[in-house]
Every structure is written in structure tokens, then in C-alpha cells.
Image (cartoon, rainbow, N blue to C red; front, side, top):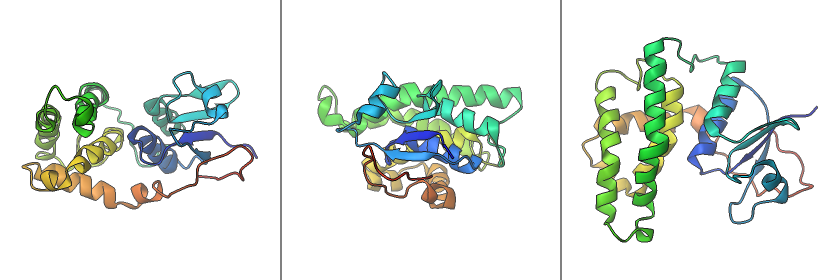
Amino acid sequence: MTYPILYSFRRCPYAIRARLALRVSGIQVELREVVLSDKPAAFLACSEKATVPVLVVDEQHIIDESLDIMYWALERNDPDGWLVQESSLRQATEHLLDFNDNAFKSHLDHYKYSDRFPENSMEYYREQGEAFLADLEARLNKTNYLLGQRSTLVDMAIFPFIRQFAYVDKNWFDQSQYTRLQAWLAQLLEGSLFTSVMAKYEQWQPGDQRVLF
């Protein structure tokens, strides 16, 4: 049998959310772990952007955006109902994902790699990101998840980035005012789905035995 090929990097939040959707959908893929400092030619040939994740469905169908991979998988099988149907919830999903993937991701990068941006302090960049944390905290004060009482695509697509933000200075995050966000993140990190997609794999090399995920 042939399987779609997923080029991934274990710790990348974009790759994490793609793996989450593939795993929950039950779609099996051939996983190829990429070392970002040593990208294989086969991977570079798949996507001009050369960023993970990339899903090679077949020779004519290559998906190189993590959200597109999530939607592709869930549109084929969505057993946990991650795709919301209500128009208001779809609008909220689009808003949160847009803010996460653009403004917040920029603040996260500046915060995590503050030594590369010496024009402002690490604390300054953290404060910029806190606007998003405060928004999520307010939502979680009303419901158990970002859009209601059950997890949806937006929770699963955003929490890998909140995880990354939290671990820049875990002591600060654990002592912060975002208690509902802390509990939400901890629950998702401790869940069997997350742990199942975080297994470690060796760097893929051409000719390696196929690893099914």
C-alpha cells in the first residue's frame, strides 16, 4: 500500500497540530522526520517554502500549510466533531486562528528569541503576547474550551503555540494570572492524543525503512 507522506519536525507547533488532526482522523501516513538544519532534497522538492509540515497526498496533491492539512484530514473523518458547523463559531475560529498565526506568532518569536531583537526587552515582547493570553483566559472563564464545552479545531490548532510561549519561561507562566489558561493547557498536554503524536523519531534519510504514523 502507498500512504500519504508527512514531512514533520517533532517540536514545531505547526507540525504538531497537523499530526493531531491526522491522528484523530485515523488517517495513516508515512512520517518523515526532518532536521531543519539538514533538509533532505526530497523534502525541498515538495515545497518551495521548505517549511514543515508538508503532506504529500500523491504526486498531484501536495499540502504545505498546517491548517490546510488539518482541514483535509478532518473533512475526511472527524470523529470528535472538531469542525464546528455554526456560522458564529466558524467566524470565531477564523478570528482566533488568524490572530494566533500572525500577531501572536510574531510576539512569540520575539519573546522566545529576544536576543535576536535587542531593540526591546524579553519582558516587553512577553507583554505584547499577553494580549492574546488575556483574550483566551476570558473565553475560558466562561467555558471549558475556547468555543464552548468541548474541544474543537481551534483549541487543537492554538495550544501548541501557547505551549511554546509558556515554556519560554515556565516559572513565569505557572505563577501568572492566567489560571484558566494554565488548566486548559495542562489538560491538553496530559491527554493521550498529544502524547501519542510526540513520540521521537530519527531523522529521515532516503532509503530508510518506512515509518507509519
